[in-house]
Length: 145
Image (cartoon, rainbow, N blue to C red; front, side, top):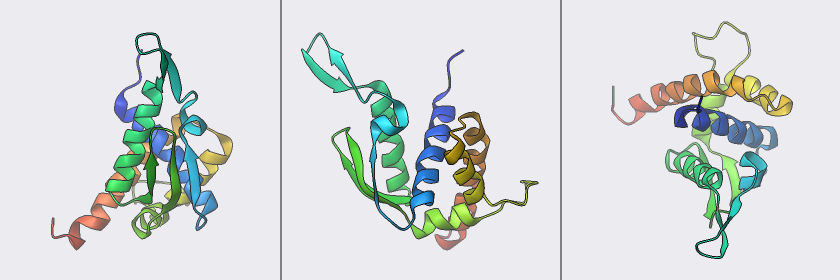
């Protein structure tokens, strides 16, 4: 069974945000291969290394996180995100504890624990909740409610 893009996005977002939280406020260079394995693959057609599909997905995900205001950093040619740091919006979302969670731990604590343990499946549910919480926090500020 193939993994959906949303599941891949949630897992990757959890890894990225968890790593940035563990190192906050220090900026990090996030290399695609840290998160998705091989960032390049050989193209017989072009006779050169090209970004792998996983690296392209990493850059689409981190680009979305930057554009949505959860992190800052610079995207560099499918190799890495330079000087990545959580924004105030990203920290606010990670510090939130949604009512639907029955644990006493905030999202940031859960993401940090998962990042340390390297768990993949746990990111899926947390990230959906985290992004919904972020939207609820930001929507009133921009007049959407």
